Image (cartoon, rainbow, N blue to C red; front, top):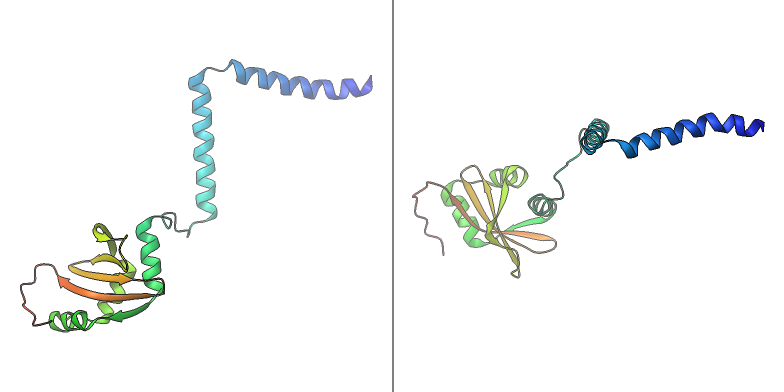
Amino acid sequence: MQEREFLSPNLTKIFAHLWQLTRMKFGRRLLLFTAGLMIGCGVVYMLFPNHDWLGWTPGKQMLKQIQSSRIHTTPHGKCRMDCLGISMENFERAKWEGEIDFAKSDAQGNPKRYLLEYDELKFILLTTDSTTTIAEVSRVGSDKKCDCN
């Protein structure tokens, strides 16, 4: 009898609360759900402030692969870089801050061919699992003719 008296008020409150939830209108239930979701997202964001939230996108994944691979340059690519005055430091900056243009890339080919854009520079890269080769370099708006074969 004493156990029943001890559990009864707590269980009654729990069941009364659950009963109120089932009788709650949809709009209020949606509002409470959205508020809880936002509070949860805010807490997660505060717990992990330096996390790369968009690191899973294909462009970011490809840039990570380029950043971690060994860099080679074809003779044609090296000639174009020298002719246009583009240094390897420019390429280093581009591989960390640039973007991959998938519309102008061939991710299905062998080797895969990607267009890396950074400011006015465009690099055509050939990638394998462990290496990245600079095949072509151009500067947007440059009319300079290079004698590279």
